[in-house]
View 1: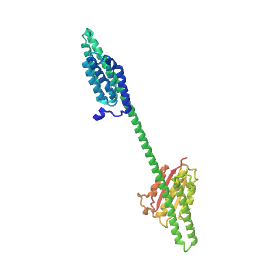
View 2: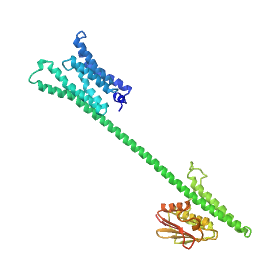
View 3: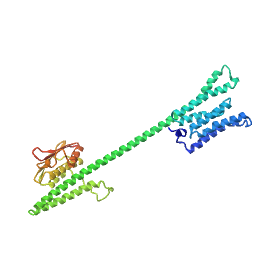
View 4: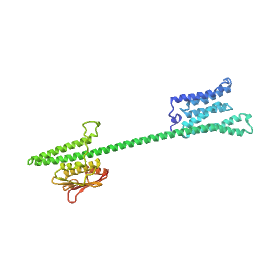
Amino acid sequence: MRVFELLFPPGATRHDWVLDAALAGGIGLLTLPAYGLRGISHPTSSIQLVAAVLMVLPLVLRRHSPLLMLGGVTIAGLVQFAVSDQPMATLAVIPVVAYTVARWIPGREARLVVFVGIVGSILGPIRWIISNPAYISVKTAGTLVLAWFVCMGLVITPYAIGRRARESTEADQDRLAAAEERYERLLAQREQEARLAESRARSQIARELHDIVAHSLSVMVVQAEGGRAVAAKKPEAAQEALTTIAETGREALSEMRRIVGVLREDPDDSQVDFAPAPGLEDIPELVSRASDRAVFEVHGQPPKAPAALGLTVYRVVQEALTNFLKHAGPEATARVTITYGMRDITIDVLDNGAGADAEPPGTPGHGLRGMNERVASMGGQLVARARPGGGFQITAVLPIRS
């Protein structure tokens, strides 16, 4: 601690000046009149009055500078030791000084008041007893020891009370600081959780948009190329391809509105489309619309699955067909098989195209990564690999949870 802060501890206010001045004035009214009534014509009385005033006056600095107050009271005590052969009433300030220094001065510096007080407690009684020969008797030693203990008690007791008050205040401040620290950590943790939730939401939206856009564009490209190839020979086939392109585009826009609609500031906006997410019942139409080179098979009866599980199955089939359309080649065929078991749903998408060459195993794109994250979030397992006889295989097993 710096010397200035030690001499003038922070925290004292203008209100403290008023309280300390009132305390000094009150003690002065109780102790000074006894020395002023003797008259200033008597030299000894005048000196004692000055010493008494010097003892009380430093109390004005009680909160603003406890050590300067201690120094002033110590000097006044030395003056009283010299001019008075008996205890003066102004010694009542000693407990106040001991408490104040112990309360407001930290650490070892506060023990200075104990040292000064013990020295004064020893020298004072000696001065009072030895200066009065009438008091010297066989009982003088006992009286002197008793006087020492009384004077030391007037110093040590308020000092102990002041230290206890300071320690209690510091403990309260430590508890308050610890509570503030815990609160700040809690706020930081909540902010981090909010950021993680936001990041997960963004990742989920990105996966949804990727699946919709990639699949829809792949279907539209395939249909457009097929329609262009047969436009001259079979105009009706070209018309059918254009119809599929239009329907696929409208469906993609509808799903994108549904996903992006939750990000709007006004949830009551009538233009926001909150159509239900696709599920198990929409998979046959998805396969038939994707390509006439994809065959769909179902084994078992569709269970009453949660909406999240149905959407995951739909997206896995959608992403697998997207990869088929993008990488398998124009002559390849695919077979989509869904097996509904008692406890799980198995999805198999097999093709005989060139997907293994177009996208080497071990370097999956965002589609396969997103598919794997979807399946893992539902507690399932995903296998995406090249088939030994050529082509690509995507197999997902998703547990059914009620």
